[in-house]
Picture 1 (cartoon, rainbow, N blue to C red):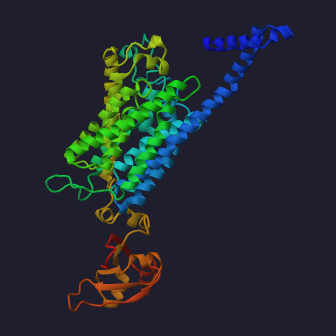
Picture 2 (tube, helix red, strand yellow):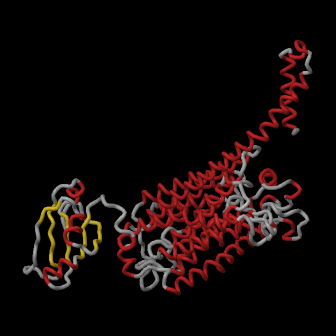
Picture 3 (tube, rainbow, N blue to C red):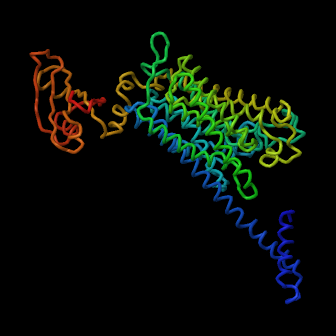
Length: 560
């Protein structure tokens, strides 16, 4: 019986004495109290406690999975409208492809202990002889997160086939091996697997409580290689290498995605405790650390960007907030709230510097996945070597006798910091040796990037059957009508059709449609066809046999 349980039993015995139990029944109140406590304690240990822990890890898994919605919104808002469906589909399939890859291969490579291999797991494929389903589900949500990071960096120009390939490889092999190194007890870098007498690194392993390295640095490094090898989007850099801005089509979606990710992080960090019974104080402190890290990262990015550009930039605040969350992810269980403020405040400058360096290298990353997850992921791992507190490590990671080294700023020496730096190097090296050649082969085969005409027109129209938005502001339509034109003129002519009032189309009222021969000049200005249209674009498409329609933003006050 633990000291706390003994105190409870003694208090219960005293209460029974006060109630007159011993005088009335002749029963020994102390023995009665011990029997009651023993029964309740045993029942709690066997039934109630495990049920609470299973509920905790399942709820945490649901929160982390909900981050996929955040990634989808953030990525969709960061790309141009013509690629919205494409990026949303890729985010959805991250979960689907990642699930199958994790089921058949990933979990076994990450947590299989059949041969106690420090490099890679070797059993548990397709959940064979494994029934801890809540833990499996929780870890799958992390694998899906790592894959999602990459899709945003290569958005708007990577092919769908190549996406399916790298999503599977990352979830099935690259990410799980990194997980095994650090989170499996048999992993060669695992903190939980080290003993004070272990000769490797003096008995100290890397600390990555919630995946700053295995999730964010793995995803960020893969995103960097993907963005580099697929090449920049058309028009991203001028002939002199200067960056030209290509703005995403919806700041609203970016902000919504940021809030959803922040919300999901309360499963990502606190949920990494795996159980909550007996860990209540640790879990609630992690939640506070997570919150402070996010807020300080957003504010530091806001004011630094204001200093640089004289603007209050919402995109920088969103990425700064996410950078703060990433930066405290590795050490969320071993730092104090005030240290989370310091670490999070550094995330904004780290992100902005990394983003600037990326553009200087002429690498195009539409969502800044590489500088955000790679740069802030690196800073988060280094910060553990500086700020990890001994007592926090004892309560959340390992027995006191195992905690020989801790944060340098707490007098723990530099050994832990050295191991954290080694961890950064090996993660970047591992991703470079695996994902780098994979992308290079796809590029050599000509399937990594879509053709120029597909990129220019947008993948929604060319690959996914139509635009993401069928209603909205005024639009003009550039319409190519080869079958009709050949019949009318016997040649190939470009035509432009415009709706005089887009609102009338939305309300299904009549619209005047003027079709002009663009090759005809001024006064010979060719032909006009005035008609009545009640179904807008759909009617034109069906009646005239239009080969393709491209939507462009128009002016609500006048027809084109």
